[in-house]
Image 1 (cartoon, helix red, strand yellow):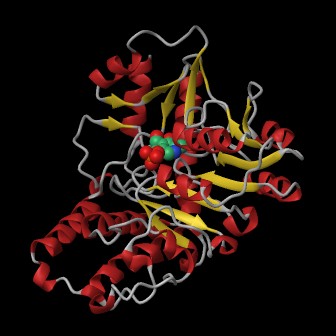
Image 2: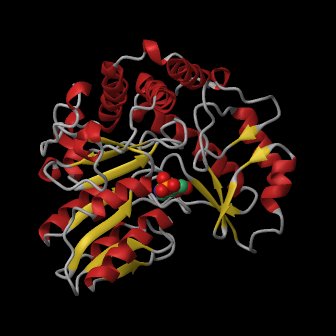
Length: 374
Ligand SMILES: Cc1ncc(COP(=O)(O)O)c(C=O)c1O
């Protein structure tokens, strides 16, 4: 078990923040890195053209290490929706084909497919989860000869139940379908072997489990798409952009690997330095150890919640960092507001209470949650 890291965050006594799936608090280190980044812009005479590249590569290196992929496969994006738009512009979908998604999937990973399907005459196939199970079997059953794209997360953002990505990847490949992943609610908190899953694209926004600021994200792009089409054409992604004196010698070639998909104005020191510090926090422990620690926290809460009559799925069916507590008699009115009044911060998603701790949580937070629920 990793020791509680609360002293690295500015969480006041009496605040029991169990809501990382909503957004992570920024650690002191992330805030310091963001301030340092802001100071760089305060004195642009010290900010050299080379810094536009080093700040971006600093982030890319860490993002690649966390995802366990080569640096050349990471693009810098501002949001999950941006990364999914890049994916939608680069995976084939034909008239009559299907895009497989989960019921109640996060909208950033639905609207983009509705729009694409509408344009080409394809349709969404929304998979329902049979009660009390994970999503894997239902997703595998839905993938068939008509599937063009499988667009799913590693765990559902509302119920925390998992999708077996290696099995889904293999099935998608077997029918020639593309695989696009939204890992915003899992990367950094739950191990994933992207080499084994082999997605076409996989995106994660940084402001939740990657402990970074809002407005940053990483997009994994499989090498087979490295010659693909970006959704915007900014100067810095083109070949030779290091030489600011020759930018209007317009060029057709791009910076190597996935860099052609980097967002415009990517070289934003406060955001990228903050996001890099968030990744450093996670890399120091490793995702396996973080997942084990979060599983221990959620299991302990689940056992105590069960004594109050609240149901939760076992780890395995659900992600280690994600607890969704079900109220057999329906969710009491004003529940989250009443919990927040007692300093306990969680989310209501659907008919369940979503409890998502991180390394800054301790036994006092679990005690406060259970006492408030009781
Ligand atoms: C699964 C999932 N994906 C993405 C996002 C955020 O999307 P975006 O970066 O497009 O704002 C969220 C936010 O709650 C989410 O839960």
